[in-house]
Image 1 (cartoon, one colour):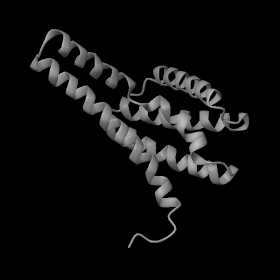
Image 2 (cartoon, rainbow, N blue to C red):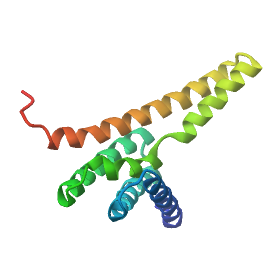
Image 3 (cartoon, rainbow, N blue to C red):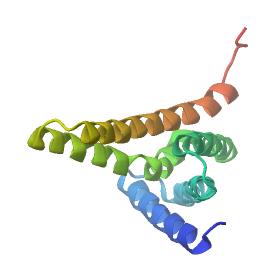
Length: 154
């Protein structure tokens, strides 16, 4: 079952982060609403997938594809660059917590000495962060590759 309150809270704070980041990197004011829309759709969809028990990497890949197609649609409709509205909207999906925990585990390994359990935990966090980043990159590049391709693949 979906916890609507938790979902709305997460989407609200992700939208605030996107709005702040968009203003910091000088996205034109008329495109700020598009950045927030992509964040609401993308981050909300990913959280819904996660609340249904889907894998983080798979849900991130599907969400990145959906937001990529949405940004290409908005770019064609409003004659803007897709990356101008897409990049600030996807920063909230970067795997910051797993990367941070991997670095903490690595520092603890260096400080306390080798411990197999701690090493496995560090590798789990590091690979999770790496594969979520790969899912974001491939999910983002797929819509542009499909839509803007000039010649057939074969």
